[in-house]
Length: 160
Image 1 (tube, rainbow, N blue to C red):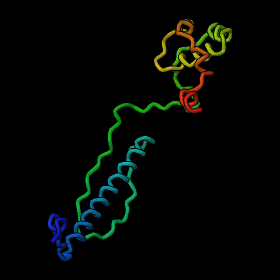
Image 2: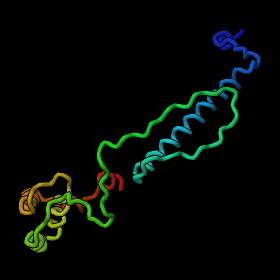
Image 3: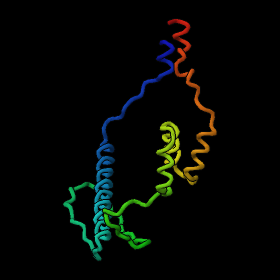
Image 4: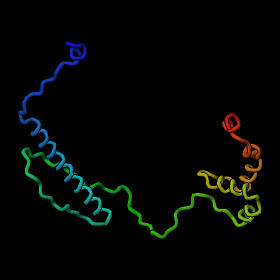
């Protein structure tokens, strides 16, 4: 006998005694009960959102199973806070501070590259600085050297 066969003994599968069929039927019954509970909960929630007081789920015909399991009792959840409906045409709440006409005129008078940088900084979340402070921040930052943009890459200098 080789070392491989010695380290991996054979496994004998017992004859079918119906245990697998019973386990599958049990699982099927549990899944059917769960599905029914989910449908009931969904219809209850839909009714609550529509303002209906009592909602009855449409009964589904259950398939015949070998084992009957009790259905879980699902009570409709009670809303914690009242639902406030907003019109669909309402604008979303402002997340960025309003920019005055004076700030817009100041941005228009700037170099387009600096104005673009200020606009990008202004859109960042949590931005509370004014446009003037952002302009100072952008102009105080060291300018990007244009010689790096025209410089060849390392690989082109070495092998090109």
